[in-house]
Image (cartoon, rainbow, N blue to C red; front, top):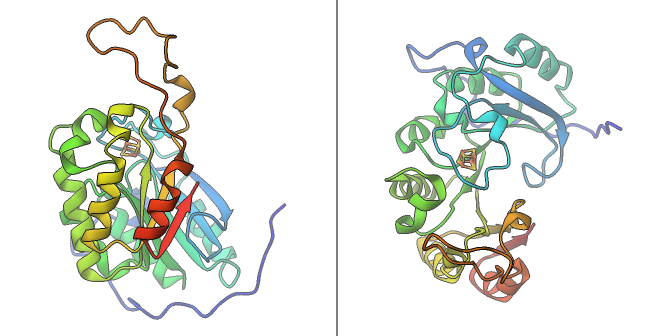
Length: 262
Ligand code: SF4
């Protein structure tokens, strides 16, 4: 059942922004789906989520594989999204652009500009894949959920993309520098050899200045071989069972102002 709450004051920051010259129009945004109401995807706000199509990385545990193809046509035309958002003015607080990787699309600034003109706060879920594009979006952003998957040097096996780690961490640096309200999220990787590095990752995030951190359970953990259940050949061996996220709760609460297990 859809629940409506009273509207909060429309955000003032960024009012009057215009999309960068040469940007595609919002109608060019390729959309894989929309979630009309959530209280989970933008902390403290009632939001709609627009799932943008396309991502250049190939994380083994991606939970939105249907959104990865960068050239898939839009499942929902922007005109329908626009009409839906108009109908929710005063009822929703925010719109979150998620994915896939929203910053992959050149039409994103125009779409954000329209969302801001309608009076909504703007949230962004990103893996920080394109730090320069993210930098150009800063004037529109009210809140960001940034996926930091691992220490920079541990990224490539997770994303199947050489050089991915430094890009994500550059995005973290620029968001911290800009002072954008930020939640860093890490999914407990199914590969225990990387999970062992999680404590080092949490310490480095805290040292970098991250205040809000969420540790997420990998939805595909059930696919990981339990000890003794795999052939484990080919030089990879069998992974020990990964730790429960709760094993990191004490450390998370000691390092961050806000620590969430989900
Ligand atoms: S960056 Fe995100 S959307 Fe892209 S493959 Fe990885 S988990 Fe999936």
